Image (cartoon, helix red, strand yellow):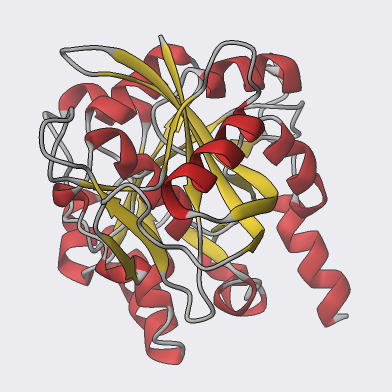
Length: 309
């Protein structure tokens, strides 16, 4: 497997730098994040520093991991390590003739990018927190949009009409929720509301592809490597992986633990949230284990209760 390092450079307007692959190269003409192969004996960070100097003439001074994922092309297999370049010196310029452009995240067209870059774009767009909420506490649970969170409305004891009514009420109160709200499992309701959907693991086997367009989030609940692979094969945006730790809601479920969680995420081809016995205070540990962020119910509600009280 070829190890590849990719750098995410963001300007003061929040735009990300893309570079077009040259004619005669693999995937010629597509737009990608700058970077290149990790040479024998190099670390990913050192390889990226070298590549950004060679391609853009900048000195990368600091970086932070975003996502690392395997990808299999017909011609070769790669592991793509994407890092945010948080500090650099110099002005990016095309030293090797690659066309460059700064692009807003919302304007990124994954159809014009290598397939392996699609999960990176999703990781850039996804927030660090994923809050699972019920109607009874929804009004008090607004940890959300202002603090960088995705929301799942999960009401297992309610019918479709009630779930739809609550979702519409929430979006009417705060229009930003239309972009960060998902309903649990009900694809048809998600279509009617024009929002995202979070699928159960069993639904992955029933689907042949992505059930919602790219302007709506689609995630899935996963518990093992096979389900994570199915989520990626169905072209979903992200998955939750659980349970990481012991939980009161599922006392009989054997927790993965952070070491096993990290092993599974390492082989996943999409961003993954840690779920089960974790909360906002576990974000750094989750990210160190390869996660996009943390998801949960109780821990998020406790944090909000402390705030509101």
